Image 1 (cartoon, rainbow over the protein chains, first blue to last red):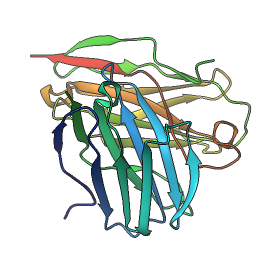
Image 2: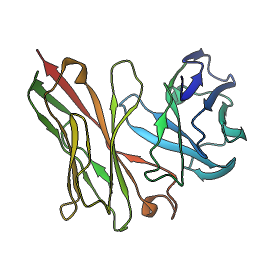
Image 3: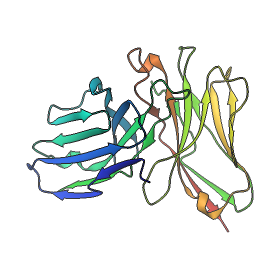
Image 4: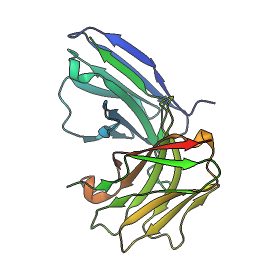
Length: 114
Length: 119
């Protein structure tokens, strides 16, 4: 039983292309997130969605556009990919009204921009 | 200013021994949560343990325990009886409204500690 899933796991593309990463959670959570992990392993929040509503946009370039069709899905679309976008992107989810609001992470998508 | 500090880039421990991974944090909000995650070489982020700022007792989960010292603003992870499979990167993270624009919608992570368990 996969709790938080992401597709694809690996994404290799050319600079300037547009790509999407999909995320789905089957935990019944109400909040979903996108994090970026850079080459030094540092993890930083990009976006938070609560009940399909954008809550946090952490100074991410406009080329990144999240979309949440429903509470169980949060997709990330990236336009005009740049070399600096190469990273591992993690989706996560949590139940905001839960006792701990623990965030559970997906397996990550390793994006390589050539 | 760094909100979560992990001062040990790398740690080594012998199999079956205990190890402590350090984490200090900075917030003036009275309500916050502290988390530890494990990231093995395969890349996934695995939740280990949680400590709430109002929790009276230190959190424990199997071989993991959290040494929570509120006055010192530290939340060290203790792994007892280390196993080879514990070799991984370990991240301390904090959820606090002060750093989330008044909400609880993000985690702030430390830079991580790479733990190596030697046989």
